[in-house]
Length: 111
View 1 (cartoon, helix red, strand yellow):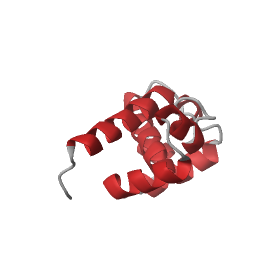
View 2 (cartoon, helix red, strand yellow; view 1 turned 120 degrees about the vertical axis):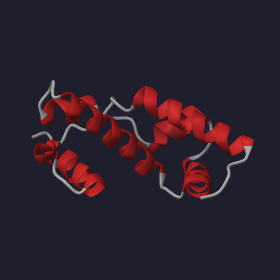
View 3 (spheres, one colour; view 1 turned 30 degrees about the vertical axis):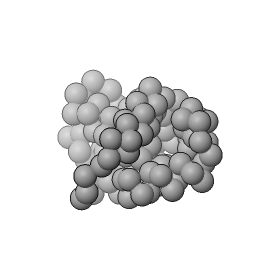
View 4 (cartoon, helix red, strand yellow; view 1 turned 45 degrees about the vertical axis):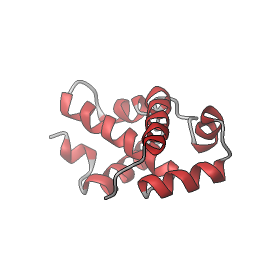
């Protein structure tokens, strides 16, 4: 882990805020993120990898999984509804991503 410069912290905050605003949109992706920030997709990949050691699509997916985890803990919706709420229209892909991140299927976690 390293200390981020002020410009790196500002950039990551900008990325986070844009992803936070758009994660429920199933069409939101790296290309849209790069347009919103105002840099090319390859430049976005390089910058996020340098700062956070994660690909931009992984950054988006991780935020979606964190939101999903929070929603599952609330126990107000079923797994399919939660998948849709976090911008993932394929429940089986959602389950795969959730399992990959947390080591448990969302249906098992919800119990």
